[in-house]
Image (cartoon, rainbow, N blue to C red; front, side):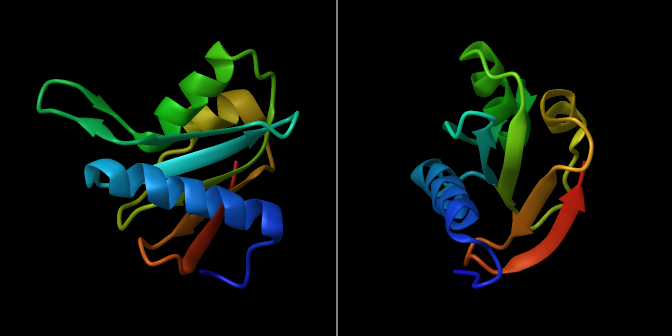
Length: 110
């Protein structure tokens, strides 16, 4: 795993990799809300319905009452869209993009 992530963000990486791996999805994501609670999800894509892993994790957080977010990790090989996360987190919150092996490839600020 990436040594560039602090301990709390490394936990998010573990959760995102696990969500992705459980169903062999294209991507996995995990977020930490303003209270330290975590949410993880995998991409939903069954040909009719598509929900990105990050958007699904955001939806879980909002449905649990989260009012903000501290960070997110997305495990993917593709470009990511952060609009949904920004709606929860606000501006300037990091989204760490990592490979399935756990290497940090990019940091996107909302």
